[in-house]
Image (cartoon, rainbow, N blue to C red; front, side, top):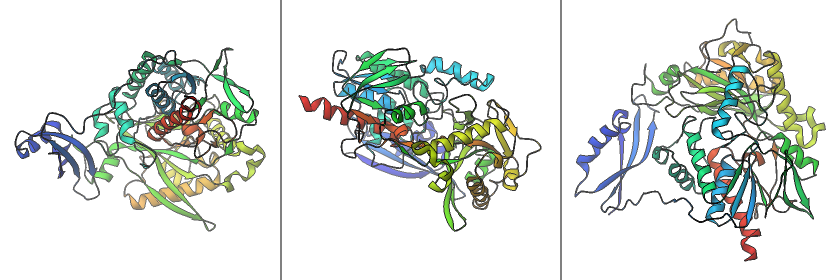
Length: 522
C-alpha cells in the first residue's frame, strides 16, 4: 500500500541525505521502499525546521516515478511550424510539437549556450554589448544565465509537475521535484538547455542560431512565414512568437505591419545587494546558518501612499548567494538583473525592489502610442548609462544614503563585475518611483531588523521585469486577435512571468496551433 508520512525535522536531518536515511530507515517496516517527495524550510520561528513528505511503497514500482519520456517519433518530413525564440516558451513549444508529430523549426537571433558565454564575458570585462547575444538573447533566453528559478504561484496555468519532469529528464537534479521553491542554477541550466536542443534535433526538428527575424511574410490576413537578416525565408503552418520581453525590434515590426499590439505597464526599480551572512542572520535568527541550511532568501512587500494614491513596493527575483549581472540588450543603456549558481554559494544576496508602473507615470509618453511604456523604460535605461559614465558601470548608492538621498562617498564591494559608480539614483528614476522606493525601504527596515544597513548597496536600474508591450490573442484559440496563424507566446507577449509559466504557455500555444491548423485538416 502506498502511504505518505509527514515530519517536521531539524535541518541537519532533513537536509543531509545520510542523516535523513538514518532517521527514516528504522521507521520502515516489512521491507517497504521510501522516497523523499517534498521538502520545505520553515524559518518563521526562531528555531528553523524543515517539513518533509516521505512516500512509502511496497512493490518495486515507484508510484511517484517520473512519467515523462523523451519523444521517440521522427518528424523530419512532417508538417512544420515556425517558432521564433529559444527561451523556455520556444523550447517547450518545440518539445510539444515533437510529441504531437509536428516538425518545429526554431529561429534564434543569438548564439548557442557555449558561444554565448564569450559575449557575456565581453559585457562584464570590456563593457561591449552585442545586441543579438547577451544576458537576454541567445539559447535558453534570459533565464539561462539569469538564475533558473522554477517557482510559479499560478498552479492553474498548467501541469507544473510535467515541466519539472521534462527538465529532470534533460539533466536537472531531481531535487527540483522535491523543493518548495525549486532552482536549477545558472551554472547547471546551460547543460539542461543544450540537452533539450539535442532532443529536438535528434527527432528531426531544426534550430537555427544567429538567425534574427527582420520581416514577416503576410498574405490575406495570415502569416505565412518569416524573413531573416541574411535574406533566408521560411514558411510554415503557423508561427509561435516567443521572443521574450526585450525584443523591441519585433514589437516595431508588428507595429510596422499594423498588427495589433498594446502598451503594457510593468514594474520598475533597483536591485539591492547585501552580504549573504547578514540576510542569513535576519532570516534564520542566528549568527551563522551552519553547514546544512542553504543561503537564506527573503520576500518583502509593503504599501505606499503618496497624494492619496496607494501603490505597492515589493521584492522581485530574489537571488540568495548570487550575483548582479548586466542585462542591457544594446549599447548606451544600463539594466541589471540577478542570478544564482546551483549551490548559491556567493557571499552576496541580491533582489530587485520594484514599484508597479501605472498609466499616470506614462502621461508624458502618450505620443509614443503603443510604445509609451517601452519609451519610458528605454529613457530610464539610457539615463542610467549616462549618469554612470556611458559604459556598463551601474549607478549606485549605499542603502542608507539612498534613503537619505545622499551621494555615497564610497561604495561597498559588489558582485556586479562591470563596476559601480556612485551617483544619485534620484537623477535616474522618476520621482514617482524613487519616492515610493525610499518609503518601501524604510518599511522593510522596520519589518526586517537589520535590512537597512550601510553594508547594503542599491544598484540601478531593474527595468526588465516584464514586457512593456502586450500582444493580444484570442482567449479560446490563443491566436492573435487580428493576424491568423500567429500565436503570441510567453513573456514577450505578456502571458508569462518566469521559466515555468513561459514553458507552460509554450506547450499550450503549440497545442492550440496544431489543433486548429494541422489536426483540423485530418
